[in-house]
Amino acid sequence: MPLVRISLRRGKSAAHLAALRNGIYAAMRDTFDVPERDRFILIHQHEAEEFDCDPDYLGIARSSDLVIVQIACNDTRTLEQKQALYQRVVENLAADPGLRPEDVFINLLETAKQNWSFGNGIAQYA
Amino acid sequence: MPLVRISLRRGKSAAHLAALRNGIYAAMRDTFDVPERDRFILIHQHEAEEFDCDPDYLGIARSSDLVIVQIACNDTRTLEQKQALYQRVVENLAADPGLRPEDVFINLLETAKQNWSFGNGIAQYA
Amino acid sequence: MPLVRISLRRGKSAAHLAALRNGIYAAMRDTFDVPERDRFILIHQHEAEEFDCDPDYLGIARSSDLVIVQIACNDTRTLEQKQALYQRVVENLAADPGLRPEDVFINLLETAKQNWSFGNGIAQYA
Image 1 (tube, helix red, strand yellow):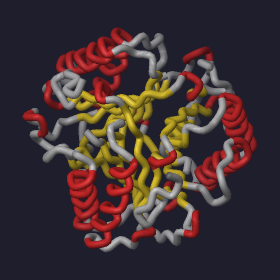
Image 2 (tube, rainbow over the protein chains, first blue to last red; image 1 turned 90 degrees about the horizontal axis):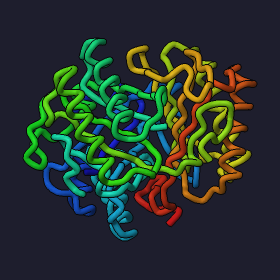
Image 3 (cartoon, rainbow over the protein chains, first blue to last red; image 1 turned 45 degrees about the vertical axis):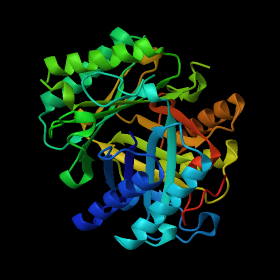
Image 4 (cartoon, each protein chain N blue to C red; image 1 turned 90 degrees about the vertical axis):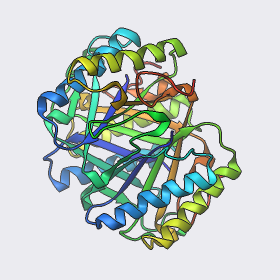
């Protein structure tokens, strides 16, 4: 049920985009109790004037490879699970497509289990 | 006040997109206590590599017509209202543009009434 | 930590888009306890059939210049701060790029401090 939006600068290869999707999905599987095949990932590519992210906030040096990952998910995870997710996403994306750890920004939007319908008009998790 | 984001694969006709918008608005009017003209709907069209949604999660067979509907709304609805919304959206989009019930994914993000300004810099619902 | 998404009709100049970004950031700095350089702003430009927003809801006359601003932020602000933010965003965008106050729609999505990682896989605010 996580619904993932990835925002980044336009122009990366299809392989790069696939690695982003694969790495985030794998991290959610490994750290966030996400079932197999629970994979719903949207990518938004932005022109320079549409992507305005500080290159140094909190002393973290970000490059033009920065990805902004916003994940809508159930409000059921602990702080420890969230910390594990953040770390694993960074590890996976460092391995492929080779992102620097500084270039991974993550935000969670938590919502209730009854706030999802995966198809057929039914609240499957309610 | 619902703010609706619809994500789907790029390439549908203008009539198809209008039917999506109309059907979701009508469903919110009928089941979700949404006032007349409270219609704020954004569509994001995605290329194949930007739209990565499992074709079988929970045993629901999704096609390339899948729409992902994310609705930011007040935290005032009951489970029964949410179930009615999910069902009605599916019914309306089955009628027009003819979506299969399996191809309608819905996620609600609930927020407080004071978290909206509809214009003029005022929190109209606070 | 606010993560800002601005949606508007496609076709405005780069200067117009920059003024939107600058005005919203300045308003958050002045009214919302947002630290310097905490600036993460994404813009989504929409074709006409992708941007369906009522031109009169609540008696507010909206034009094709309408901007929809959705801000994910910590759940730490008072109603007074939110009202100040709404007002300041309108004032700033009226000054530059010259938006009418009716053409500024704002929605906040509040989330917990532990729901952010600004890089390096760490929950910096937890």
